[in-house]
Length: 172
Figure 1 (tube, rainbow, N blue to C red):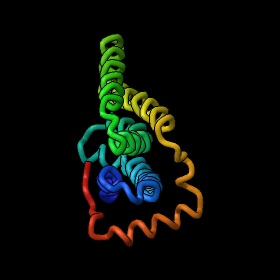
Figure 2: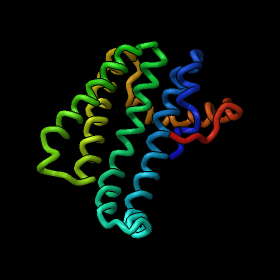
Figure 3: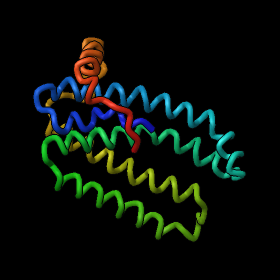
Figure 4: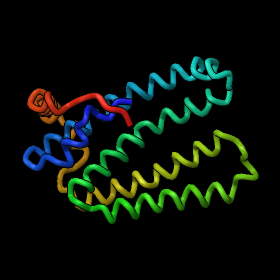
């Protein structure tokens, strides 16, 4: 998947256009996440038949909805990294691992299948995303939803054209 055109790294290191890059990161994350989510959902049956595994259909279709969770989890992490809040990030990652580990240990005998394990892994990431989101709101005065105001969508175009040399397609 495209890692938001390297904007995440630019957001961490750039201090001058912090707000504009934050808006661009959110907007491109939302757009690329939506496209990837729909694509995964529609291609689930083909992917499962390619691997000769019908259980993959359910895993991919339900898992595709967690694309947004993963993208915004990364965006919120980058916001905290930008503000050097590494201790908070480490705490939330630890909570994530503890939550999904406890759930798996408690229910693995009842649900010994790949779908359950995948779902619980993403559920832990969802919990981490919510904690990062709440921390980001307390630290960061720029509201997350401002990213999608029409005037800020125009700013994204400016950020992309200004930082053309820095932006690349990367995977995560």
